[in-house]
Image 1: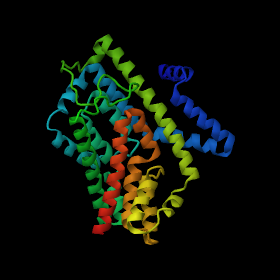
Image 2 (image 1 turned 120 degrees about the vertical axis):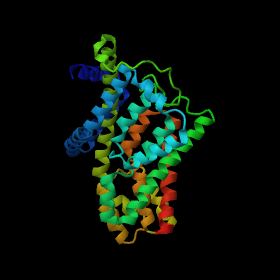
Image 3 (image 1 turned 90 degrees about the vertical axis):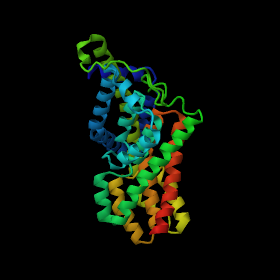
Image 4 (image 1 turned 45 degrees about the vertical axis):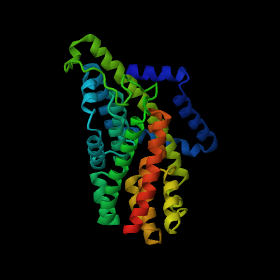
Length: 341
């Protein structure tokens, strides 16, 4: 812990842009709305604590993979049979219990290990849209048809992103996936290093133990500072841009309503569970069900905290595909729900 604190202090002294941005936002809030400072800090701390188990697991996993050499085997497993891998990743993503931000540390670890980008993209897009608890609540609040279609939509958006990423790679794109500050020896672009024997008991070798410590601290610092900034901005959105106000701007007019819901869902953070009763209420007031579906799909994947975390991990072309797939998928599937509903 002392080493991590020292590294964070060094980052601040070294003019780390994320740390500077975090401090700048705090300063602006303190000047413009001092009463919001304490709630925002409390929200940020609570959100980080909530995600801490996922963060710790992914950090330890990435460190273990690096120190033991297991990342070579994982990268090797995710080669070949790309269509099947994309399908499995999308299905697993729709069934996994990770939220839009909770999945970020897992993805960071997978990409750093060199796991195939198309499979990761499929999992990445599908995971925040649906999980078992969400399915049960959605069925109870919006009906089983809504829940089943949303599950289908999660898989469909995951497949769309995975196959698009595969196509871009086949055309020679996405040779570099992770940003330089994140890269941990694997770019996630499908290039697999020569497999070497795995040292499962890496702690018995001082050099590997040091690798574990260094790799774990590096990824922990990277994720902690970006997620802290994301949650801080989220707290301001929640405070100053209530979800009810956002949804009222969407309207109730068919295709236009679906398009507006997609666009509004991108910048507006909305907790997936809290969104369900709100969307149900506004559907009762006349909002097109397809618009409600589109809002939940777009908002779940591209909310500001999740999008910021994605932007921190990958290069701009990969981020553009992530956003573009979420927008297109949410719009098309929103229209689809309107057609079958």
